[in-house]
Length: 227
Image (tube, rainbow, N blue to C red; front, side):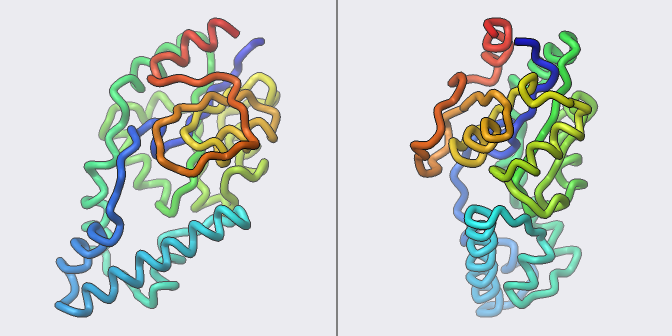
């Protein structure tokens, strides 16, 4: 099988999986900008709104933005609060150390590199992270559900990612992700091969059988070589 493109999930794949205490994180952010009970109430409202948006993503494959999040929570965030929120997430966003070398290897083989992420964040935040970690110029195209309005596993999201990297044949595309439903099942329904990185604690999905399973991203090159 010729491989024209490898498209990656972001959180839990290009970034190592980490557990996040969302209430504590939002509490920290809100406490820096709101007073007392207001901060605690805002954190609870934001966690509830975020959970509701992700339920819509799972059940209806509907994308959302940070604007949608704050609107549901009944808030209008100041720029300073948004900056604090982004800063609070920084420890969870560092790119896996294997990624720069892997992406260079793929591009040396004339294989396009893409990213497809279910996210509330704007493109600029993701690009800032990739630039910080020295991989932004190694990515040929990226698609974010916050812009697309559709989330994985909807086939439209995978087709958009193919278009972003200039790939026409789904059968020549490989998707790499940590979620059996969003990533493996979704990619295979779109006609791609799917590689599972089983590090996250998301619920199991029995309807998906990965084409390959890896423990480290550096193993991707060998998987493609075998195919």
